[in-house]
Amino acid sequence: MLRNLAVAVAGAALAAPAALAQCRPPATSHEARLLAFYEVPALFSMAGAPTLLQRGTLIVGGEAEPVPSPSQVLTHPDYCYQNTTNNTRLAPVFGRPRLTVGLPAGFALEGSYLPPMSVASAHVTLASVAVSQTRQLVVGGSQVALQLRVHGTTGSIRGPITCPAASLQTVDAGQPCYGTAASRDRFDPSSLGAEAAIGTRLHRVALYAGGGANWISPHFQAGFTDASGNTDRTTVDVALVRGVAFGGAALDVRDNLAISSQIYLVPADVATLRFGVAYRIH
Image (tube, rainbow, N blue to C red):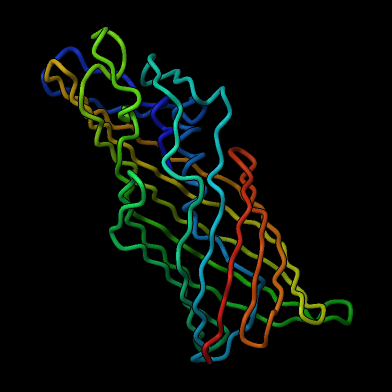
């Protein structure tokens, strides 16, 4: 999912057998913006229209979204490194399961967990949790649902991000990816967020819109050993605040089954499409 990050951290460490450097790029740098860009698919935003759940209600489901590609501007680092590598991708789609449990007083607890698994050349572990409260209001004679929600995500994605096999070369030691073994890099998405949404229902269709803010602190660590035995373990860390807006619709296919779609917009970074399915057990 994240090989495009290669262009933000690529380069060979030539000064020492085991080079460890810490880079904290400014918020306006290409590196910081690229890390924020790839944080977006992992954000645990609400999956469907605000719904008041009864205590003990259990909903299982899942979501999927296309992994976007960054602009050409972001694919050229301007702070931590000056070299670049090929712009490749690990997977075109990101998905995860969801579980929601209704609690007293309109509260609900949501969770998602991807156990350690391999998808193509990526090794992924991701966990998310959220707590929300939904209230039914009457506005202009119509019933609407108002939901307030906080959420958090942590995890790691490992794989050949900076120097995949296709980028390796043994011609010029001064150029990136000088070696014979693909890199073993790590990207750790990490976020906390708060959001609010309001929705209304038209027969079997629910419409909603909302917004909020995310506090993100993604971490990246390179892991490439070149043909001379030099190891680059440079880390890149940023801490940013991002405003978000979203809107979508959910369709009740049956009384206990719904499908949904959502536009999720982070004005500073990217807009994505999210698709979900939810099955109410009781």
